[in-house]
Image (cartoon, rainbow, N blue to C red; front, side):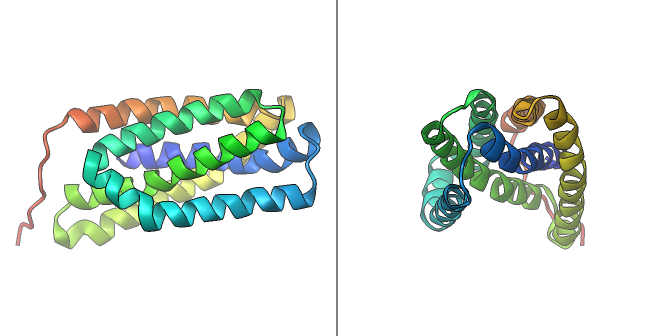
Length: 183
C-alpha cells in the first residue's frame, strides 16, 4: 500500500510539473483558462469528498475503488499525452481530478485497516513520507522528461501507475484481515 502511495504521488507530481508548460506552450491557453481549469478541479475535489466517495465506497469497498481509480488515472494520463485541444483537456483533467480524489482516502483507509490502533498514526506518518519523496522526485522526473518532449511526463505518469494498479489488484485478492492491537 505504501508503494502504491509513492507511485501515485510520483505520477501526480509529474503531472503537476508538466501541466503549466503543456497548457501554455502546446495548447496556448491563457491565464484565465488555466484558472478556470484549476477552479473546476477544486469543485470536483469538493464534490467527490462530500458526496461521491461515500456511496461509491459503500457500493464497491475501498480496495475495489482503489483499483478502479488507479486504472482511470493511468488511462487519463495516457490520453493527456495525446491531447491537443482545450475541450479534451478539460474533460481529461476533470476525470483525473475525480479519480485522484479517490486514491489518497482509499490508501489511508486501507493502511488504517491493516494496522492496529496504536500504530495507525505511525503508518500514516510513514505514508506521508512516501508521498513527500514522490513530490520531490516527481518534478525532477517531470522536468527531465518535459525537456525532451513537453507531454512526455503524462505518459510517464500513466506508466508509473501500471505497477501501482497491479499492486492494488494484489491487495484486492488478499483476504480481509482486521488488525488487532497487541496490548
